[in-house]
Image (cartoon, rainbow, N blue to C red; front, side, top):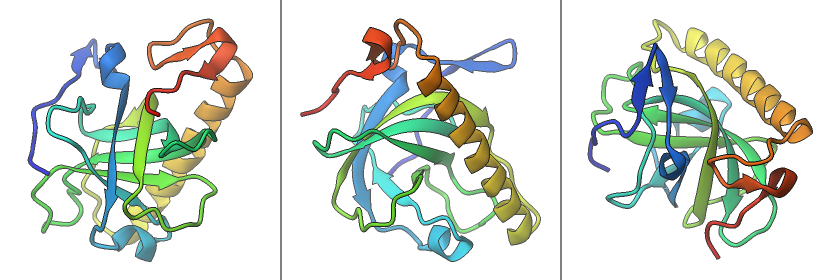
Length: 169
């Protein structure tokens, strides 16, 4: 995956995304395996050229696997893994909440709920693990709150009281 310019814009220090930038996806490919070693196995996405991907950072997302109807929660990282100096291309790494299964070769569709933070270079793996734990807790909380109080419409495709609109068949 090649480095691309940011597809979001900053307004008063916060990120805002238009409708087409909230939803994106790709096919799960092999990565370095670091997520599993750190206790957070990730699905690494190969995103098609031209697919709108949010700016680098950590996000809470809703996720669908292939044509499966079940909506799952996820915490995703977009960027070049600044803690590890050997990654020079932009990556989309997806930690799927409460799922322990091989996703290699699967198509995944994501809808961004909220940006949790920007990318940070950590001084130790322990610091990275602690922050990742906090990110997952925050992601779960955001997604649970949105499920309890759905908006009447949402640019990510949540309509009709929160039912997800299928973006892929």
